[in-house]
Image (cartoon, rainbow, N blue to C red; front, side, top):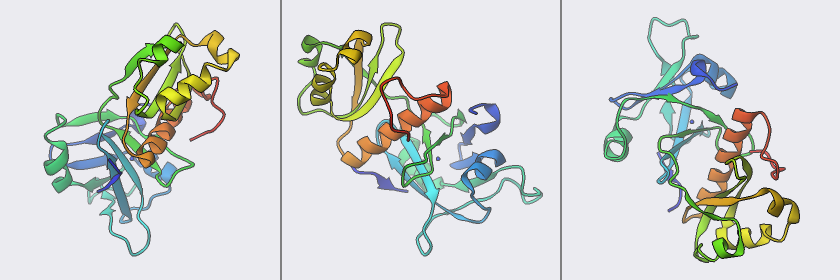
Length: 218
């Protein structure tokens, strides 16, 4: 399914989604993104795993207005956008409100600036071997992670998962370190590319470095 048009990690940086469909951002997140209050913010989302994607709307294009959390604010207490219709028609049947502690994932090499994951991926896991590879349907496209025996993420990638796994099995450096491959299926190329960037950006923010066998930043 294509993207559907409609954001150091810590508590001071987390975002929230209340039951009325208002998405709130701490001021530090707004400052890091370079957003201005009253600016228009464009939203898109990935259907599954449910993920919001945000960026400054292009001039002349529609977007949600970023307003102060309170009219009494000085402008340094954060901001909010109201997504009432989207929340009612899309989110309410899939998630429980309110959602707090949403970790902002900042994207640098993407059309989007920010991602917010509302649902965790439902990973499928197989052994990193020819036998395990054969358990992956050759039709499956998506994103994958190569894992060590202690579940350390060694590589994040995207594409036809069985094909990419077979390619990695030819690399002895990867073979010596990898125990498992886990993946999620995505139908659209645009989705797989942005989800790969999200996973890499999250890993780099959390661990302060890329996975061992990744060289491209998000």
